[in-house]
Length: 453
Image 1 (tube, rainbow, N blue to C red):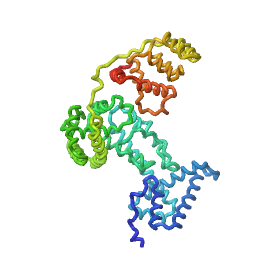
Image 2: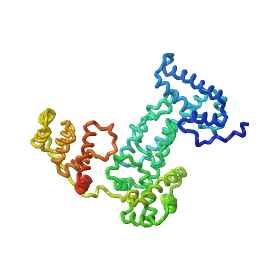
Image 3: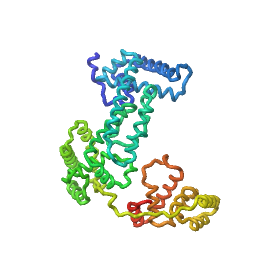
Image 4: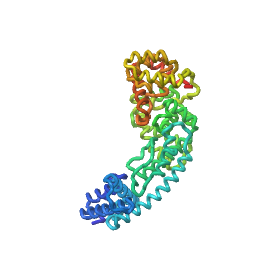
């Protein structure tokens, strides 16, 4: 009977994150585990939870909070599932559940965590070694001390093996799905290492110019560098352009659009796949792991290109590289700030002013520098109407300077801003949105050319 049932469990239905629960459900559904066997496993898990909770309390038998007990149970189930997942197939995992006590399975899983943690630390060292030179904040923060490094300092495999105690803002081209704890970190690092390896085929300055063409403020954006570089590299192959410069002109993008627009979706995808194969040869990529990762990434890029062709937005998928250092610049001088004593006196006067018109008159009379205007927008507790009145006093250069310092399109989370900083960005966006398109364009040009002192 067991031989007939062997292999009937659909592996796609087994959760990577909740492996133990999912395999028990599938085993019960296919009569590989009886109801009494399920109840026995659950009872063993509860008894083991009591044992772990006592250890968590330092050997005392006093109760712990429900939230803590639930978290320890999740950690236990994750660790047990981690070992079962490592076995050759699901039938072996079910046999292990039937014949081996839960504490013993847990201990095997706990030992496996140690192995994976050691492996992940080694991979983290390799990621730091092959890290590319780029100013993107999320990329650097994730790899540096405040990011993944904190995982190894804070990870608690005994009582929170399923948690990811790290700040990981940098998104991969192929996100790690259905994994948590040490498995997530290990897979994330493996993918990041491969993305770095690919990007290291290109000079950092060429990647910088490419991403500057995407958005000059890209250093503050949550973008994936590898995806942008791979997309551009494929575009270079499609346009028969030198791949290493990562630069496609607007004329070449328009020509490519005209070529692709006559093809159906499948034909476009075939051309992209062929270009990707040629790219691997051009870059002399030998690593099977990297080849596989690039092949896994191409369908996503192909879909973006097909959609761009159909919506006539190919210029947003393929971007022309720019060197921001060669652009004309405007030197912005903000003027001499008020003395601290006089500034504090002005703020106090503004705070007790009852009428907006009186506040505006005070600002016009006493404020002579941009720096003081900026500080007042933070300190004087002005409402939106009053802020707009102050902004109306400013010229395009001053508005551009404010937008450069407090970008309304920034992907910095509101939680990372003070209340005053968040309010100013909201008011600035509202003010900017109501301007004419011509003035918006002029301010945008000035902002891109502005050199703040």
